[in-house]
Amino acid sequence: MLRDGTGFKKAVLICGRVDLRKGIDGLAAIVRLGYNQDCLEEGTLFLFCGISKKKIRGLLYEGDGFLLVTKRLSNGYFCFPRTPEEAKALTADQYRRLMDGFSIDSTIH
Image (tube, rainbow, N blue to C red; front, side, top):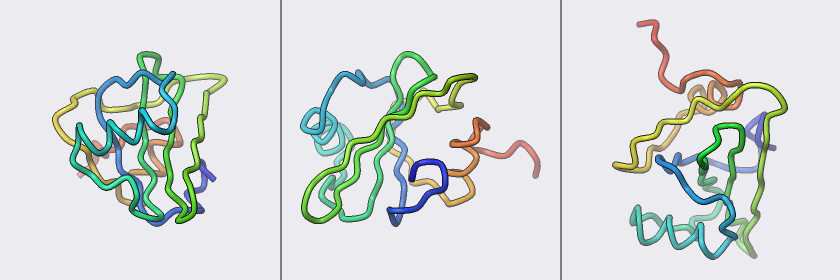
């Protein structure tokens, strides 16, 4: 699901460091209060990264409840932006780049 981008309509990157020990309620509160986003938007995957860039956590509302997923890389790190200014909606290409371990913004223009 996380690697191939299936099971959700769009992905929103919650920038900055997040305590990944938080559960569904804690992460939903960050989305609502910290970024003024609707965590009950069906099909939207919110992505969080902690202090270690080896783990990424996703929160997805499926219409009848939340799905909380965690991916920990066995080798390498996620290239996750660290500025907590605002949430960033990802294009499909940016999402694939993030999951493959590359920067979400291409350096080739």
